[in-house]
Image 1 (spheres, one colour):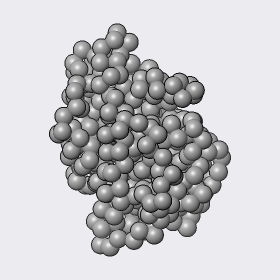
Image 2: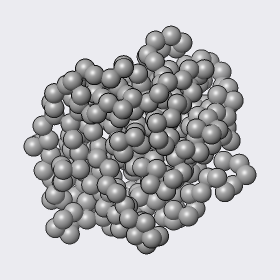
Image 3: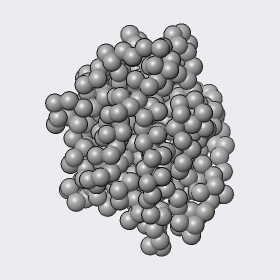
Length: 312
């Protein structure tokens, strides 16, 4: 979806991440770099869209036979604040710059949840997004550009290196449309909603398999992202200007391309030449598309209860 050119962006909802320094060098969920498939692909299998960082409290999250305490380091520890968001003022900026697009999406997503959750008797606590380049520290350990976007429940922040969007297209086959990128951001805020509602820990109780708690948590976040898309054009800036232009079928196709690209089966087939559902942590391409569309077509968060169905 494209942003209305005169929508005003609120950069106070994001912050820049420092480079390097501090922490134990671990990745969210205790997964360490090196070994196995290596690099981005290995980390994508377990961490893309926040899968490796989910949980509640200072717990240990086993991943591929490894475990490690989540780091309690602060954002930017040992580094410097490097990003300047002064170029992100309006929706027009968001339409031509990916960092500004993230900021505009964060603004819209948080406006949506701030309006919706009180209807269910729950106040929405805003969560900042940390925009960084290369490497930074999170409450869940070191984040690097080898790790896909994730949500850290220990500091209630979303971490995104905007260069990931190019990888999503060039390496995993998603198209380069705006909604493919906005879906990524909205999915991470889906994890924040799960954390607010006390659901996020279900992934750790049942961490792998096609019907596992981990997969159901991820598909729920896809569905919650879909509900935002349904109502996104209703969200407005501080001046009452709608953030987004009307949704087109091309927009929906763009989001579906991203959801499909990060299905466990698609990634496994591309990286190891075979599909092993027993190792799934995020769900199949088909399931990710299906649950996103459930959220979008209904616009009803009650339809996103992936734990209330026998099979996902």
